[in-house]
Amino acid sequence: MSEFDLIRRYFTRQAPAGILGVGDDCALLPATPGAWAVSTDLLLENRHFFPDVPPDTLGHKALAVNLSDLAAMGAAPRGFVLGLALPSVQDPWLQSFSAGMHALSERYGCPLVGGDTTRSDAGITISVTIFGMVDARRALRRDAARPGDDIWVSGALGEADVALRLLLAQRGQGAADPVLGALTESHKAALLAATLSRLQQPEPRIGLGLVLAGTAHAAIDISDGLLQDLGHITKASRCGALLQAACLPLGGLLEWLPQDAAWQAALGGGDAYELCFTAPEASRGHILTLAQRAGVPVTRIGRITSDEGIRVVGADGVALQNLPGGFDHFGT
Ligand code: ADP
Ligand code: MG
Image (cartoon, rainbow, N blue to C red; front, side, top):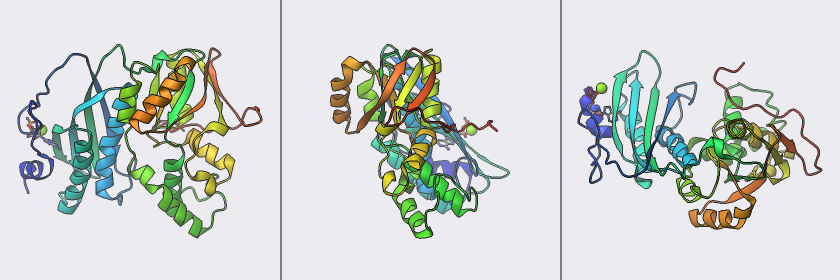
């Protein structure tokens, strides 16, 4: 199959009215009032995904992580481009990968409008660049948190991290994982079944981001761990944070793990793709109404402080020690 057959078969869809999509030298997206919100992410085989990951979930996730960046800005999706480097053409893989990607693309009205395709020497590399639109005055920027703001998160935290730890343990990596502790093999299998979709098919919080724009102050999506990502907000906003560990939404984790382990996964675990945002205390009721409208649960987990640094206290008000760091590609 030629490069062009591949593009036609798997990546060309009828573009929505008004858009010139795949097939010309550039895509044409109509400009409307507002600012373009643009974001890009690279996914490398073995670094960001296991070689045996189901390709449809990989296609989903490659787009989902970019939609999540738009959500964290309060932007509306308009379209995306796909850079793909493949060692060889595997039809079933491409069929499944593109189907997973197109399914999510259709749900959010965010068409694939172009890209580039090339052979790689080794391993698959996927690059997605996404385009959204936002009123720049209402965009949810990292530098907009104010002391006294409530800190909120959407959904639940820690489940994707637990799934990743279980997959690494299966591969003989992270054998003595402190979060998994002494789970039996059958408990591990059941916990993986309960958490895997949170790792492989995160749901981008687009609807929530759209309703929060103009009301919330700062927002970020949690890709590298709550503490690290909230740290980007506090640093950019020149403030700090006080978190109540007992308020963290943990999904079903406490059915399986001791509280300390679940807190560890929720505070340090990446791949959650939930929104962490700040909003004035006076907006509490309004935030709950907006979140209900978006159909996404939100939980208040702390507040922004004027002292810098992030502290986390337990139910007894005592600060937790040994807080987990987040993920850093160049970290040691
Ligand atoms: P050019 O040589 O002008 O860069 P290409 O031959 O690389 O164009 O690509 C032909 C068309 O196919 C272009 O419209 C490009 O955007 C699109 N395209 C290439 N690869 C992909 C892909 N992986 N997904 C979507 N569209 C793609
Ligand atoms: Mg090209």
